[in-house]
Image (tube, rainbow, N blue to C red; front, side, top):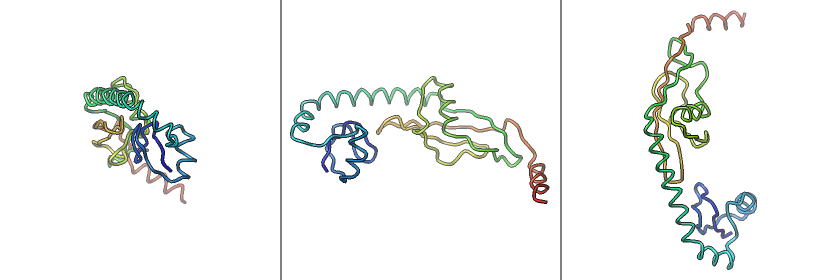
Length: 166
């Protein structure tokens, strides 16, 4: 089915693009979620008329995303501390929700947790890299430094699990 995208759709296209997708994907996801419309003669003519406005709006959003990326990258490092064992393994993991809260606290910029991707899960003490996808073309890189706020002896934890098994 041929559609005109109303919004950017990951791995499909950007606003104003004419794309061919499977009928079920169009009817069940793209059209009901107002992400696309059928490419009829009338909608194609309207797209041609509105193309300059669509491109100007996309450029404005791109510039805003670039400015936001600069502000986020100016923070350079997000420092967190959590309870850890003697080997440096954290009790639990640091989630993208927690990272989004820390970015808001440090930079004043609200970031959706779904836009944050991590190279590796943060489940031990050390430095990690995260990528924040601000738009389809703009990504911000930030380093996360995790330290132990409290070191707990792991031998105690092992003894407790042994007594529970008996």
